[in-house]
Length: 311
Image (tube, rainbow, N blue to C red; front, side, top):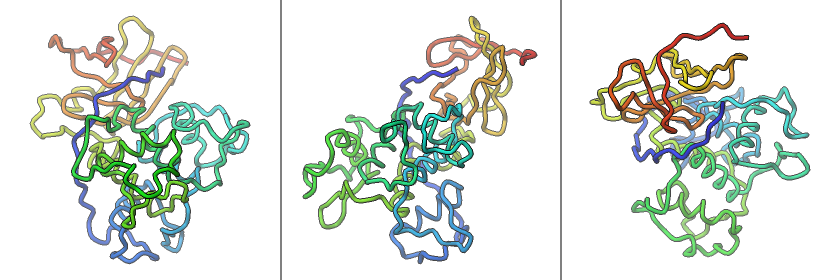
């Protein structure tokens, strides 16, 4: 079961506190401009160091590495493995991430059924991939949002180098401070994104969406005073008019089942009184106040049930 719906933007920006020396990064001093972002993402398991503890901040990020880190940052959503690209090995660590990116419209590859996993990624492409991922789950900034860091991309010296298809994404992320230019007034859209910059923009995106503290799969009431929390959704729910069951676990994960078995799986988080799945579907307790019912964001009802015997 797959639904792609537009959710309300999550405008709660949380600050994550990472314990000092929580991780060791051998090739980066703490004074490095990206160190706080790198340390946090390594701590969260979204990015990693090699066996010697090196992060290699100045090394360009490949397309596969970026999509894999993006997928992990969004909670590792379930994607069916269909071997859509000729150059993505079915046993590669990033194949599910690539399939997810294709299914969700983040990337269509480089043509001829190829993804180009080992190719480096220009900054404008990376920014666009990130925006599309945020937009897919309904958390992308819009032209109605802004911050003190707002700046028109036309003010940068290399504005005309930005591809037309990337301009809106970059401008919208600049509006909320996710993308910033260099001190000399350039955006460097054609320059390869390096590992330090990848960590920085992923961190800023997660911070903007309020997904740092919740671990991208855990749950929380956003103000500590909500009358509804994740525990209210735990258990099995069955759609009224469809043979589909939703199983909400207490560890921050969910599963969809149909009469043939497992159909989808992923993670969830709470924002206020709404439970959001990583697939883009959200749920609230029945607005009519009836116990044992929940409603999704397409106004379809589910009732408390049990998993059937499925194949």
